[in-house]
Length: 399
Image (cartoon, rainbow, N blue to C red; front, side, top):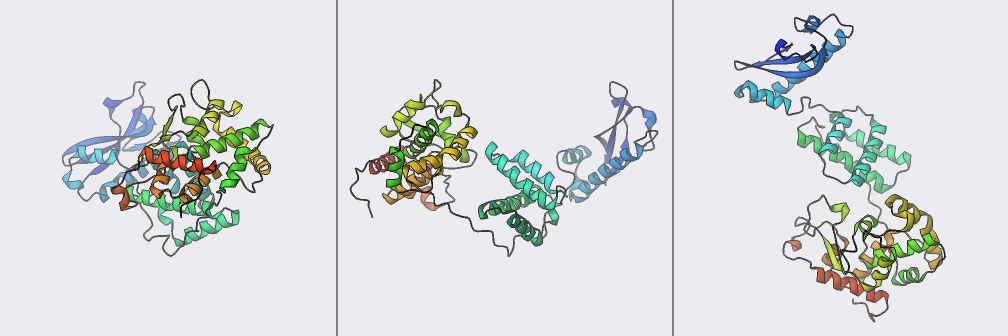
């Protein structure tokens, strides 16, 4: 059984003569040391395993006792500790979390350190956590989360007026933290806190437009530069298979002159079969691309090259574009939704629509994708079909 003591090692004094207090681990006839962040000015400030002759001695001794207890608890939980050498035991202790009992802040910070996610997702997860912390407190122990916590958190968000989608996303995120803690071996709730709780149903945004609506947007005229930008961005997204603005701004159109090929930002860090979106750029999109293409091949919408500022333009001027075009409700996302809806109505298969939209598709989602692979030519034909339909060159829509 390992024996723990707090010590200083005279031969390991710091260059300035100070000493770092260490924890001595004596085990199976060997002794190894675990350094702490407690530093004393001289050897005279440490006697019989405790810090003395300092104003903060009581605080430092309490800190050391807690650390020793954490290490002892970690050793007690290792069922095979007796079979390890002292060096192996110290390695296990110094390369793992010594305390299984974590609060929600600790688990969140560890999750963010380990997660392979985009900056946009990091910002979203941070918002989710801040809402959870506002309800439960930063130091709320994760293992104390129970059914009442989930119900209370949901009511808290209801009182704040959050939408069903936001409430659902934040509850799912709380469950993600619990599952992450379980995988890490941290203390988690003994029972599933979501058992018997029905998550809010997501609100589906029915923001797609009819073909006639898209035609009116295409033909809308305005002397306002920002309204023109909204119109051109909307139509370019529609012509390019509902491409998101973050992906549109990242495309180098000097390299992609006739064929667009890009990896969707939202699913870049997730495993998927269709890594790249690739199809022939329709002729309708090329004049818009040339109008806004900068010297580096990327689109430059005047002073609104910054993505966040361009979103502000959409927020301020999409309503004016909708009024000019005679459309009731219009957002940039409507281009993506409309393209998908129109392609589906024209008989394009779901797998091809998924490919064009850059959706994450893997073999787990459906066994069909274990046997088929959508090609860029299929995607090009589908995009061409949608564009021809907008031009009125398709006489009948397949049933």
